[in-house]
Length: 115
Length: 112
Image (cartoon, one colour):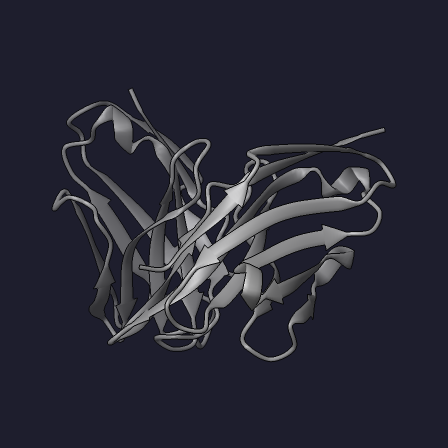
């Protein structure tokens, strides 16, 4: 069965520091992987997605993620954190079935940014 | 263009009651999916509808049901509410059965 595991339920960084949010996946087929961000009391916004093209994926707001098959990882990074990056981040894998598809999400990582 | 719209945004119910949540997809999108997000957890898949038919169902009890209308909008119904049904219910739409999902802001249900 396909799944994702996010390491660390809470990450705290200083403004301007590197952001690294970890995600490992389990999949018997080439995975479609996603990172979403959720601000308080809001829905999910797509940051970036991997769909078997380039292994380094660039997303919105300066985020990027690298697909590493050998490590079954899809970690999210940003070189310099901004206060506005404080939010909940979810890694997800797309699972396809006969007549459709669904997302399986990790537990989420809350990112705090200190001034 | 309008995104996915959900109503109501917040509601409070008591145990045993029934609730109906509504979702309007992005114009041109024919598939609607529902997810439940309990506080502190990632969203969990409940249903997918495409062309008014159920195409996928998650591991939820029969108290949960949904339908999709000819205009592709959708309703999620939950009967005999339990305290554990308190959650943010997210609707997502896509162009087809396997298209990229676009999420609404959610309906936050509190069961007392």
